Length: 112
Image (cartoon, rainbow, N blue to C red; front, top):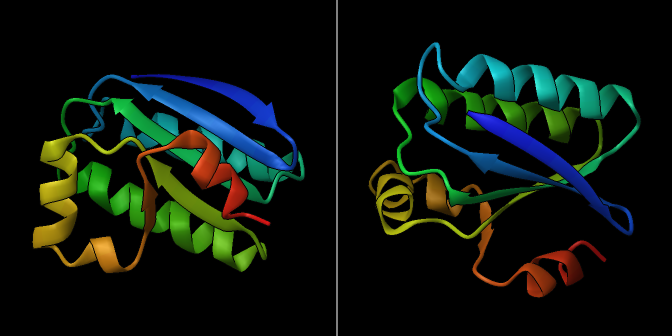
């Protein structure tokens, strides 16, 4: 798992690449989110376009990330869900919890 960060206005975009699984990406995501929140960023957009697979630990970390951001008074949104991840979020009913977008500009506009 690799995570690149870039900023667009008040939104920090995290481009994730690789598998979001136990021992592979879940701890890296947790550390990156904690770092970004510590830097004062509150509006986060997770770009999942290059994430081919998420297991239960990765899913749990995404939910934990959502709660962490919400506690800080921020917003977390998802971008570019793959079919597999969208199906997983749909089956687990988490698609109703996360705001998900297919277009980066629409996602960024939704923060204002």
